[in-house]
Image (cartoon, rainbow, N blue to C red; front, top):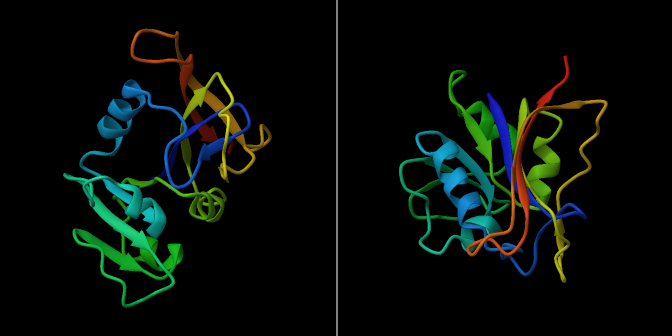
Length: 163
């Protein structure tokens, strides 16, 4: 199973200067709940953005054009194809970013786990690829309102590839 997980604003923006656009504690909890015990694949910049390095209780895979790159706590592969070949068929793999890795993975993914943020970030320099309704069907949606810890409304949405 290949899943993509991301938080996107109304313009499909995902980041600015290698940082998240919005601080949403429930999004971070959902990310942890879904990915713990599974494999996560990310680009080098995404790995560099992790405050404490490799995420615990997950198999961390970093994609880099530099084959000699070392990322403590993570395996490094030079392409998404090679990384996926090194995963078992029963392994649940989550693609966690960034922009170019999402673009490469979207045609291969079985599922999208998106946090759709009901606002537009003031600045963004990284974007999620277009999600075609001809390919992706909404499976479930959980809406959340603004509260004292979440400055914007958001929805947890799961999309499945149409057969």
